[in-house]
Each structure stands twice: as C-alpha cells, then as structure tokens.
Amino acid sequence: MRLSSSRNPAARAKGARGLTLLELVVATTILLVLSTLALPLAQMRVKRERETELRQALREMRTAIDRYKDATDRNLIAVELGTEGYPPDLETLVEAVPLAGAPDRRVRFLRKIPQDPMTKSADWGRRCVQDDPDSNSWCGKNVFDVYTRSTGTALDGTRYSDW
Image (cartoon, rainbow, N blue to C red):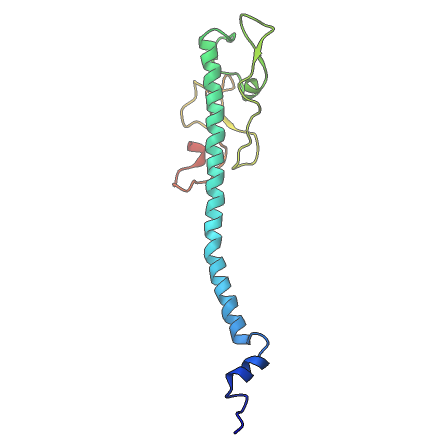
C-alpha cells in the first residue's frame, strides 16, 4: 500500500522549504502591531530624558547664581550698585571673577553655560530681581533667575518656561 505524499506528514515536511504567503502576512502584521505600540513609549522616554536634562541644567545655573550671591553677601566679590549682589549676566558666572580682597585671585561659578535641551541653544531666558516672577523680559541689570525659552508642555502638563 502506497501512501500519497499529501497524506504523509514526513513527506510533506521534507518537500516544504519556506513560509507560505499567509504565514508571512501574519508575521508582518504582528511585527507592525508591536512596533506601533513601542514607538510612543520610545518617544515618551526621549522626552522624559530631555526633561531631566532641563531640570539638571536649571538647577546647575540657579546654584551658581546662588553661590555668586552668597559670595557678594560675604563681601568676597565687589558689587555694582543696583544689582542686589546678583551677577550682571550669565557669562560672568563662567568668567573668572576677581575676589575683593585679593585681585590676583579669581573664582568661577560655572565651567560653561549649559545648553538648553529643549531649544538646543545656550540662550536662556533671564529675570532680574525687579522683574515679575512670570515675566518673559529681562531688565538687563542682573540675573536673579533663569528659565527655558521653550514654549513646549511637559509630561506633567506644565509649561517648560514655568520650571
């Protein structure tokens, strides 16, 4: 008794050398669905990392401003009238500032001005002591606070410029 190759699974498996069109369509569909689900998660992760970088850059610059203010309050740095002891601009934090008692000694508060991860530039918004807390213009006398110029919204729903 001779078995036909269509009924013998071993014979059919021996002759089969690839995937059928239906198997390819199903595998492609599964990969497409999985990649569609993974893309928003990857985008959210990138946004979260940029937000973390923004918080770190703001904290670094605000700490440098506070250290400069502390040094002026202790009379270690000469203060211009009307500046309230805050740095005149962000570049002053990077440049070596001479100490009041020893002009040959200098102190730096930042190595460099960090890049804003949202705008990809080192152009930060600045506020003076005299400015309103939510002001977007700088009086030009001193730097009391910094903020990003990005108009984007964070994952928690707040605006980046309000951080």
